[in-house]
Length: 145
Image (cartoon, rainbow, N blue to C red):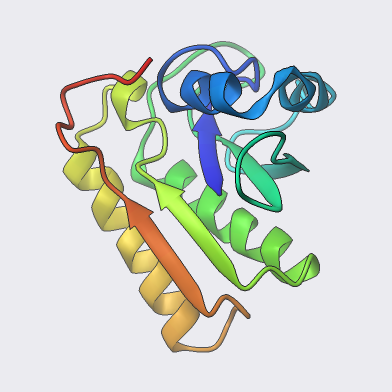
């Protein structure tokens, strides 16, 4: 699973949902990477989730302060997730709309960026991922808790 977070504190939006479902250990692991750069992915265990690992990417903000998400960091995070997945020989990945609920970027823009990266990478053979599932919320205006 690849999920986005502003600063790996796993508060709000998708990151909080993942934190609540996974376990406290995932939060503790993610805190080791608090200084990670926007556009990069870091890897933790999946805790109680039915997955091998979680790829956390910082989609908004910077070391100098918070900011709004844009397509470029989303693409960079997903590229970084795919690179990390290849290093770990991961073959399937779930990709939710990264930080769409809390970033202020239109969910359709997130979906477009995610789709283009996945199609480019998988179709061209740039990644060993065999299957990627884009996870869409039933109601994109509803934030999960």
